[in-house]
Length: 145
Ligand code: RB5
Image (cartoon, rainbow, N blue to C red; front, side):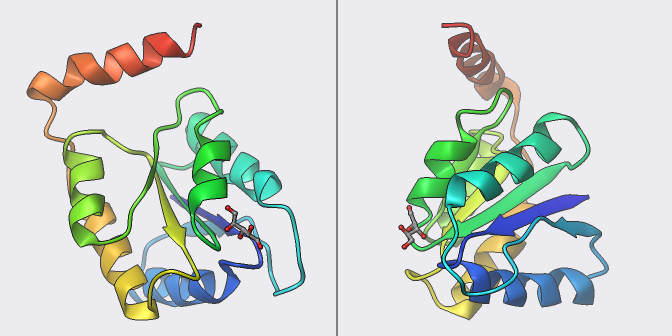
């Protein structure tokens, strides 16, 4: 399952991502927000991150205006490797090298098509493992500090 969430700055793109996931028969859980009224992004970052951290969801997608706020917030949660991706290449590298488990997007920074292309790349790229494994373990060690 994929957990998705956003604030008001990411709402419109979240709706496009919902359609993409539905059309591709990908099961998802939408943690909101569900409109353009102003809300606080840490609340939605927490819900999506906890779904991924607990194992309920395999991956998460978070969108705010720039993607910065949700990425900072999500990375506070144990086990989360949230990557703010501006293009397809970033999304591919975030999976290949960083084993990212949450994709963050800037709803006010990219087009609908760019967003869908980035989501598609994120969901269809695999972690390369190998030499990157120990670095991911080192990131986990940082959580103990
Ligand atoms: C909301 O106006 C905006 O600050 C938020 O969506 C996000 O860009 C924060 O990082």
